[in-house]
Length: 272
Image (cartoon, rainbow, N blue to C red; front, side, top):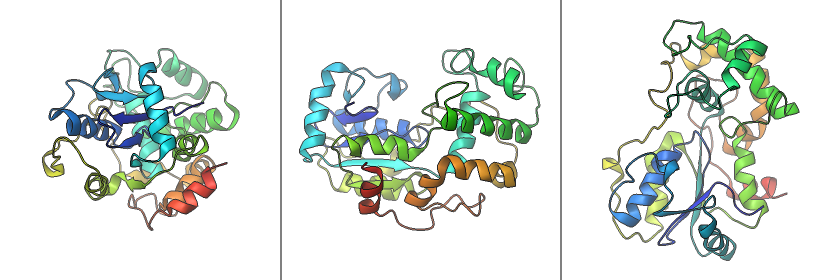
């Protein structure tokens, strides 16, 4: 199984388990900058050098040794499940991707046909009922996660605890898990604990939001998208995420965490 979704600086100063839709582009660029003194030109997800990634075969032995040896500080980052699934919908379902096409080719036509979702026409620019469409998408996301139908769950909306657990189950341990919503504080704490070739000034780091501009702007406050049934579905999919990462299930309008993450609890509950 190994360590899918794991990135490490070439200098082996830090190891990061990527969780999609949780500031991963910014984190990857910070790691790259800390080694090279410059940002990767393009989307960091496309980089095939300058950063060790589990997806690059030559990087695998180095990552495995670092992770299992517990000598390299390891971290990951989480985000409120309500805003994360909304972001996935606007970016991946409504948006046109970097290659000028729809995400995953036939996925959106399938959703339009089977779930009656509207995405604002071929170019995503037409007006549509965002709330109704999102709630239908949520039903689809639940079906993929619960029954793996009509397709396997996608990494952008599968639970954070699932991504985070593979690292623990295969022998890794996190030194820090921080909140996207308190990014500078969390990333700052990671950087304080490591030696980097180049100093990173978080105040000067741009936010690398690779999904921005892909899809329509969210037209309503977060809480407007989640009625009683939607919240029930969100709980079914993300119950562990709310519990382990201390987010407020009762109030979709509160994106901030309501407690501190207990690393021992995370390792105990996700280590099986």
